[in-house]
Length: 389
Image (cartoon, rainbow, N blue to C red; front, side, top):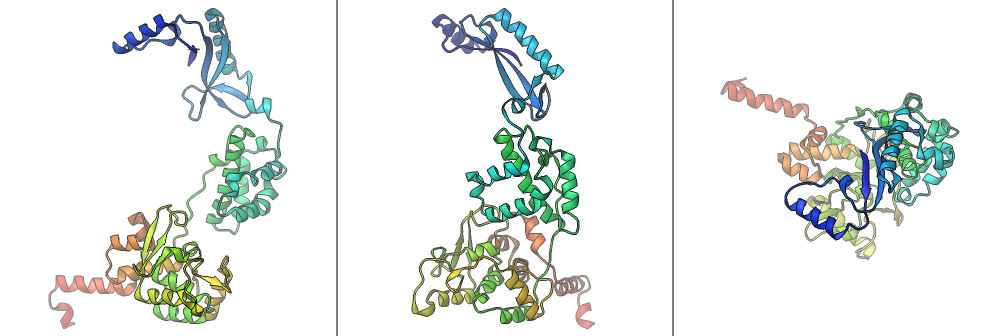
């Protein structure tokens, strides 16, 4: 903070003195350098979108420099003047000086054309949410006029009769829009980032019973049955299943490779096959008398399966399976592996869980498992007692 000097090239005498002091462990103050150069006044500042303020000790402040000339005495006077103006809030924000006011709907049109935004996997859904969810509330507001209170009120209205996780998804989009607006110098702060998005309480423990699985599989269309079988036997996520290609299926090794681009934690993983699943994939590979070596494993009439939510709803309705969705097959795979006696570390390796906490969230302890555990405890505590009773 204060004056600093920039010299393009030091004199040989100055350079030798600097090297000598460096070797002696002495740090030479730059202000004492006698070489000709340009002085700068530099201060940590924070920008409220309208004015600059002195930001000493303020989290999020940034260092800003002003050129104050080559004369040291004049530079000192200007340095003091800049400090005074920052304390009094007399310096206008860079955004006010160079950016014309822009409304949210105008920025939304620019935002969806950013290449980095177009590369997002859920780009089409994001555009729909901006148009249908964010635009009705924020559309006519000036970007710089959107406040924390506005975001809180929007969350309150959006959250009426909706899951918190849904509101958080929309909040994430709004936060990213304002982050990009800051990057492009449209606003001075990201007010959406200052509003907390509470962690939703959406943990589930729905696991199919064997009879329910039989009914569900029987009720599914023929093209959808292999998709269900893959989820039931491996616990793979729906996007991982629908995006699976034959290049990543090794029938010889009985392994399925899932790249980090498709996994939730961004890590590559290999999923082993059960004998039943191996037979299913072997049959699909030579379906119709043609050996399939490339392309998607699961298709509908030769085309990519994009949406199966409504299909899953109809299958559950026809099979009379209540409160179930495709992702619950992942809960079932974890629970079935654990109930089969597979140790926790191996289960986590198969399904791709990075933490024990996440594994335990998916692991359901069935009543019969608890009863069996208590029977074992009773047998240990009172030998012969359980057998007698």
